[in-house]
Amino acid sequence: MVGISDDDSKPEAWKKAVEKDQLPWHHVLRGYRTDSDLTKHFAIHSLPTYILLDKEGTIIARYSSDHSELDKKLAELMP
Image 1 (cartoon, rainbow, N blue to C red):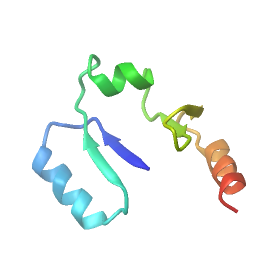
Image 2: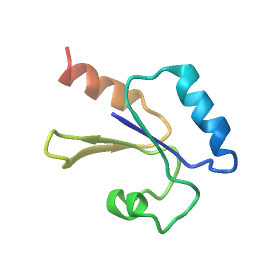
Image 3: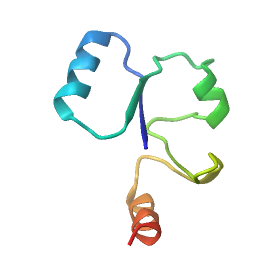
Image 4: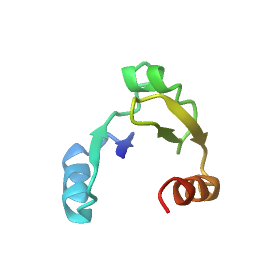
């Protein structure tokens, strides 16, 4: 899992929040740049966007702000 944040107005505050939350995955501060490599590669057009990748990095599912379907898919894949 990778967490990508867009709010780059206070990068130090973002770093502190990541450390405080101690979420066990990688975190990236992408910023509001709509021309970033991450935006282009994963075709991110709205926030939040949840993208499920297989172990080869291929997109197998994409979800928007309602992540209930994502939760179901994760439960199916990781019983």
